[in-house]
Image (cartoon, rainbow, N blue to C red; front, side, top):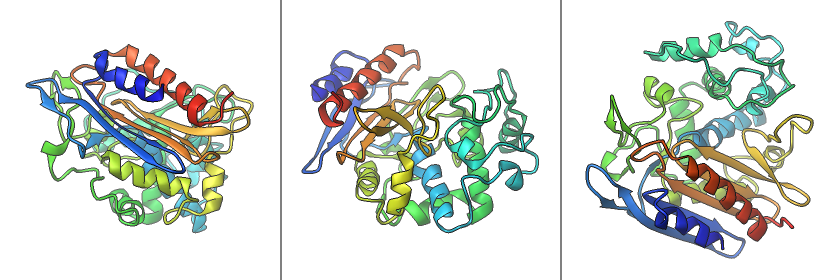
Length: 330
């Protein structure tokens, strides 16, 4: 049933193509179906196609680096953001608040002018609190942009840290902020100012930052994301400790409007939570640590247009199907 729902994304014309993997303790099943692009001409999807994974960057890169710095004693969940970024206006907001999107920061600032990397930083500092910290979960890019700045303070260049501490140990050779072969990349949106975006980041704020940002910017393919996901399923080796993996999937917002782990959204099963995250371009991952199962889905649902609300409905149905089939939900 899960395979059927995934394939219907293509056969029903909701996405041009799909690359997905279903991981269980005994096997990893991969499928690549459909088209890589529809315009300016139709091109078939290749098995090693590289996708703009959008907000999956928040968990693959930024959350992983934050946890590594915590393991090394350079950072703590209770540390105040203001201690690292004195311009930040809300002294009660902690690293944990950023990781769980419970900082109270507004989702965005309408019509805020961003024309440079420096403007992105000013945007983060200018983002107002819509709610007091710790009282509401509101998913906001500013939370992970701020974490990206803090990670750079602790360990230097963000791109270099990701390469050294995540991509190289996991042999994720097709993952980067700057794909060396744009022709291997799956196109995203046909943008009125940028044309058909291919091999450069779709997210506007990340684009202003030359792709290297805490909230978006990474490109990857199915095989590399399988490497990453299996590391989490096997106690974190070699990038994280078993303790960090256990902590990721804890619910840190039990009394709020959404259940959030460290970086990850949480999907309830009968007696535990699975980890879940999405990317605007049409990517998502579900990981059930208890059952050692996972689902990785890569699409370019914004090609040629982001006007594709039905994808979001189907995505929710697919996640629910995964939880019933492989996540122990009754």
